[in-house]
Image (cartoon, rainbow, N blue to C red):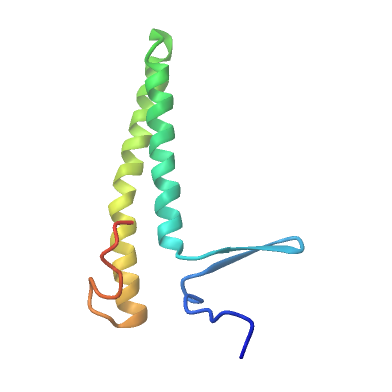
Length: 102
């Protein structure tokens, strides 16, 4: 028996080499979606804090605009994942876990 686990998600993985180390990102659409959600929270939190001061209201408004753009990115990520699964695996949309909310 092989001691190495099988790499079923090799195509879904992204490997970044950093010196002698490597960072393996599995389920990259989910990882990008999580990072996007964190950015949404950061933009809205910073914008909310800036609104406590009238002189920071302008930059705070821009933070809300950036957060809104990030919110629009989420469904684009979900659609991209659906289309990628269709192209790579040839499975019908919604099959093989594609219905997850990333």
